[in-house]
Image (cartoon, rainbow, N blue to C red; front, side, top):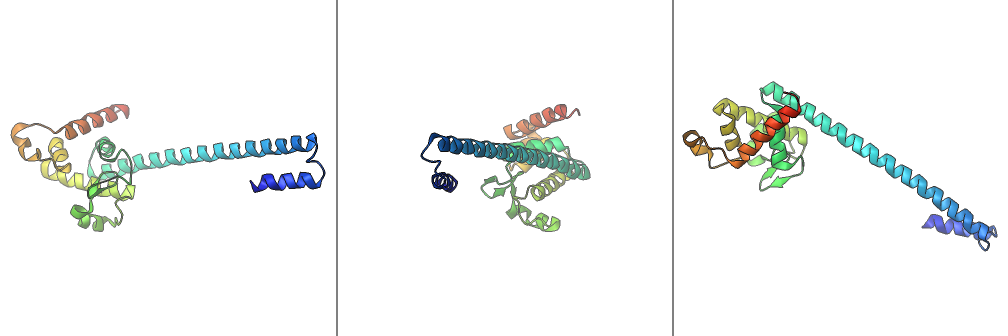
Length: 185
């Protein structure tokens, strides 16, 4: 608004404000500034989209690396992240935080071991979550049981007897298989 006042005052001092030419010039410069602002907004938006795409690509590469070190299917981790937080690093549910919904209460020692101070940091959250999954796979070996325990399902106790999975585990297994097909695995 100051710019418009300045231009109006300038045209008034030059004797152009009172005639049609001054108004036409002012409208021209307003249009020029509007176009410049629009171009800047488009450039800023495209840079933000590109940065987001790069961050997403970095996240998938990081998951691949962390999972490879622990012999865990990265698509399983991606399916867990989609289900738990919908890729929102700030997601919180009860005491669980971040992409993989990790509880600091139960994983404090694991966090300290990896130097993770903030579970809303996506990279630290993934590292802690994948390490926990690796521990569960070492203990149970069966992916269904691992998912039941990871989710804290009361069905985990009956799983060996009934073989029934929770809807949570079924959803993650289905999405993981779908992601594997998408990734050509």
